[in-house]
Image (tube, rainbow, N blue to C red; front, side, top):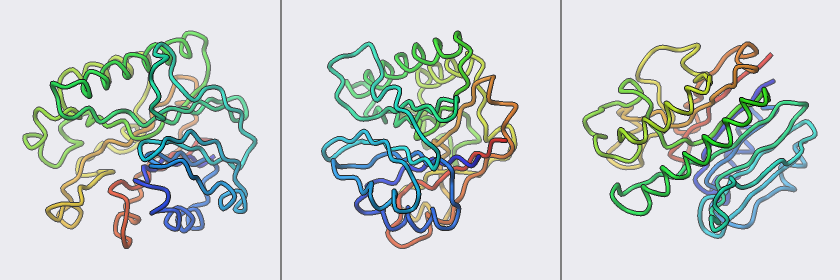
Amino acid sequence: MKIASWNVNSIKARADHVEKWIGMQSPDLLMLQELKGMIFPSERFEDLGYNCIVKAQKAYNGVAILSKKPVTLIADVLPDDSLDEQARFLDVDVEGTRYLNIYLPNGNPVGTEKYEYKLAWMERLYTYVQKLVHDRVPFVIGGDFNVIPEDQDCYDPKAWEGDALFRPETHEKYRALKNLGLYDSFRIFDKSSEKYSFWDYQRGAWQKNEGIRIDHFLLSPAVTHRAHTCTIAPDPRSWERPSDHTPIILELT
């Protein structure tokens, strides 16, 4: 089963790109983040053979899952904060495996309520995932984590010191999540540096490969043995008017 994740940075602006990439890769399940709007072209993707689950938000955020196989929505919001209206989470079931699509908050600038929200959201995610692990539910968490896990996941660690994506508190929350027994699927298969999933639009970052790896798949113990490959697909970042992110691909047996 081929699973992909892609922060498209506006589905309105990038729907053609998504359709083109689907034609090239034909993923069985595609997680999308940062839809940026209430309108989602479900019929367009249904015509390509996908079932669509969407959690949208006016102007900001937004997540969707496209699945060739029947899909059941489990939850579209993390519990423990009834006032949280940001569209950042989907949990679905496909043939007995749970797929969590997340658009984790950026958190910048540090020292504001935005960073506090990021850390609180990560704590809520931890609590949710902890129960899945306890219940021995097979699951995959994919999406834009807005976390640079290690120095090797960044073209220049010094340039990101103090950023919300690279702060010690962020790393602590991310490690706690992994310490539930989860595996970074990309690092199972590729130990090298200079493999990134995001390049800023400014300063020729793409052309100079000054990127960061912030899009991830974390696998539960019950799924890890099924992992066959995990790769980053950089080509869409070179297309005209691209997203600043590029897709990541996980293949499960």
